[in-house]
Image (tube, rainbow, N blue to C red; front, side, top):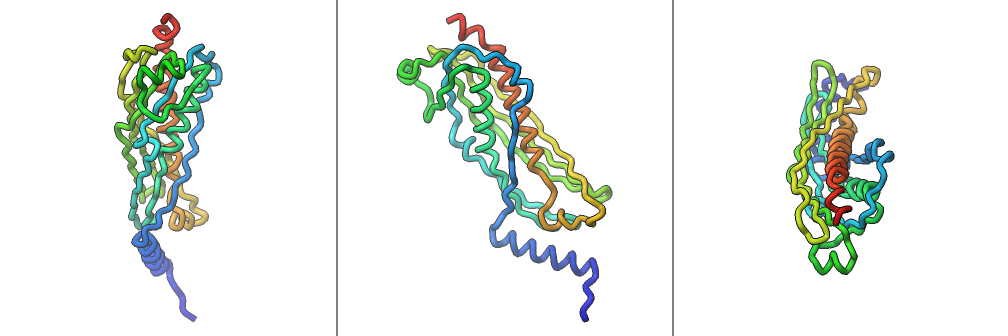
Length: 220
């Protein structure tokens, strides 16, 4: 009977994970952000707004690879764009009483045709992921630096604000000592909540900017 010690098992596991990575199969990270609870108390602005989110943001998907003696070798795929875009859309439907999702950049013709009182455009500036494993305490830290460029225009396409919004999402994932890190070695640390945290923060920040800018829309 062949006895395989812990060190040998780890080497075999690392080898198998490496083979999986070379085949290009990444583990898709689940990202399910929620709207900030404070938005439920907001009284919607009585304005019909068009929302255009650039395709590069909607389609954003990031791949990250991580090699560590504890977690092994992992290839992660973070589908950031779709949940971020949906969260922005959901937020605008809470802030305004009517929202139309635009398929292209706004023009005077589109504004008049759809009878829009304002237009919001959003594009990606930066999305940076940092995956950290602290071996001494067996914990993983996920960090997500996220920034977008948001432009808010009135019905005449005059700029109300055009700003870069930046946040940092974080998440701490601690190993379960009873399993000796078994699930970390196969599935890896949970980094999805760090991305969710960044999305939730930046969408709420954008909502605050929109709520503060309501007067120019209502008064026109």
